[in-house]
Image (cartoon, rainbow, N blue to C red; front, side, top):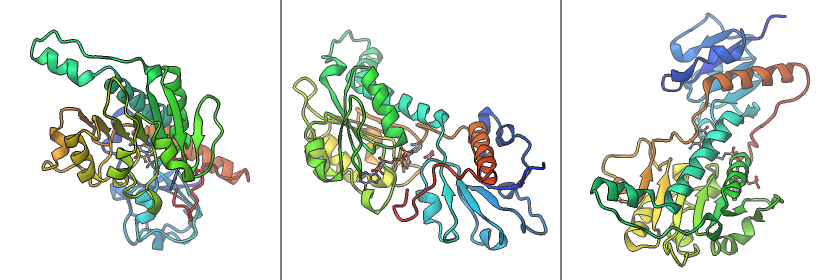
Length: 318
Ligand code: NDP
Ligand code: OXD
């Protein structure tokens, strides 16, 4: 049986370094809107894979049944005023992305634990200079957002020896990780030496990483200032507070992959803090071949009447 057509509205220019979406789509026909393909009609096209899209795109898709997001986060798709109402949205959940994010989170926790910047600076100055390094087991990493990414990062941090706790809207029960629901934020913060953000961007999480939260974090006897690591979304953090907290020692260091406005402006003071590790939103890029295979598999499931996985809750916004 011929496969149904997928409309693509994603600029893969940066992501296609390692392969093409077509390698994952297994022969599924595509209308590549981002590359300027404009058939006479989009009638009959039931599926769209999008990240950014034009105002009038969906007006031309009378038979649209499912929208796939090219990323795990759907804030950008949901915020687009041209998004049609009531169409199910499937977000991208895949081991390729989850693994990358966990690698980045583990790397950042280890960078701070093992004082990477201190030793880089010492090397740059040809100085033999010891710095205190507690064991991972003495450090509690508190993860805000215990979904797909938070849970995987939590398990991997545990395997590295960190003590891990988690906070999320609803209560979770995870072996070896003490979990707190949204009503117990202060209790959670007061135990966290390192705070990891893996939250989606919604009304409830906008600006959540602010001075008030940072000032409630636990202080380790050897590494006294807490660390903030954000791989979720930049608009969840208040960057003026982060800079001020790095300045006055409320925070001892940060690792940020996401920013209130991207790309981060060259004027941002964040660039200049010695213990700020900044990345251009690359912690867990979507692997285009895996994305194609995922969308193809979801469409096959859907057409077989098996239902879609990883549907976005349109009321909660993630
Ligand atoms: P999930 O939807 O699986 O998990 C989201 C978690 O956040 C859930 O535990 C949820 O709670 C919790 N949460 C949501 N809102 C609140 C709230 N108001 N208060 C407390 N907890 C809340 O998402 P993923 O783990 O797959 O992804 C998380 C985010 O990571 C994405 O939304 C995206 O923004 C970001 N991301 C960043 C990437 C990067 O490269 N930097 C790459 C991929 C994703 P509950 O479990 O109770 O619903
Ligand atoms: C995503 C991202 O949401 O890359 O997948 O930010």
